[in-house]
Amino acid sequence: MNSEYSALELDALKEVINIGGGNAATSLSNLIDKPVNMTVPIIEMLDYSEVYEQIMPEDAVVKAIMMRMFGDADGMFLFTVDQAASESIVKMMMPEGISYSELLADSALQELVNILVHSFLNAIIKLLDIQLVTSVPLLTKDMFGAIMSSVYVEQGQYEESVMIIKNEFYYAGDRLESSLYFVPQPGILEKMFELLGVGGED
Image (cartoon, rainbow, N blue to C red; front, side, top):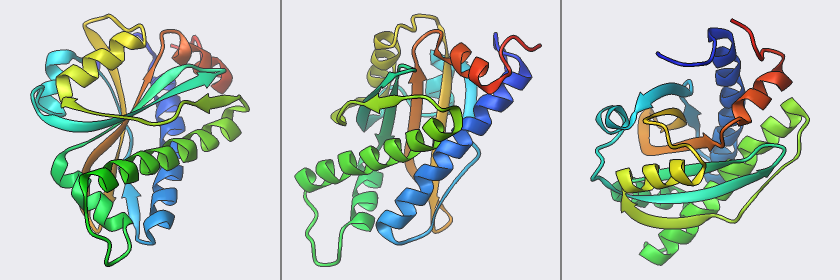
């Protein structure tokens, strides 16, 4: 993987994301009262063309819930889910006897992402001893390519290669067709590496 960061820095970042994602998976398990597991976080430098080849087609229509992060570090959390997975996740969350509706699904997904992100951040806040707050969840529906490119541009990342940081969740042995991305503003990762004591290492 081509990267301006050292192997030590990327390993430290992966461990931080792993702790945060594990915390989120535990919160999700508690919410639905069913076991949810998480894979080892994916951290890769990819061109946009590689993103659409390896992760999801550019023209795939998804629901996306975005939450901005402010404080000692700035960035954006992005949760993406396709229609089929949206229905599955919402049905997992809802008590028996509750009829599915698109309005209910959108509200449930926003609350789910709110819980995931805050669980993630609570772990990071304790680990790094920093102050972080978030915006309220914002839901949109669009093509995956349009959502990804707009989020990276909004975060001030204009390069052709972008760092993909994401967690994937599994339920009953099957991958939930959804991912939680973290898109940092430029310079934020360097601050995190300094806090972790690995900044500037080769």
